[in-house]
Length: 63
Image 1: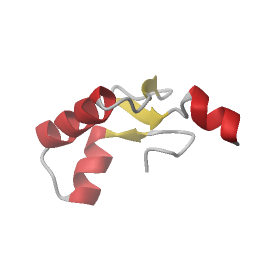
Image 2: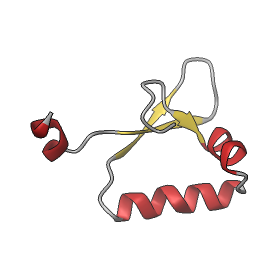
Image 3: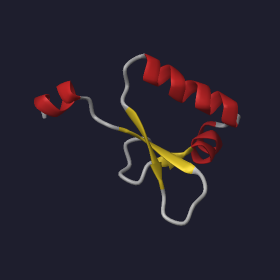
């Protein structure tokens, strides 16, 4: 879900995983602390933010 070009909202992740929103946000924070590059996007016409995994420079060089 996080690799989609348009990203995914906390609500969408929560619904798919069966988690509460605060658990989803904590998981995103944990991934960031582990070095995963997660960027925040704003979708046109929506109030909530979307999140997407951005490939790291090491991953881009390997591709």
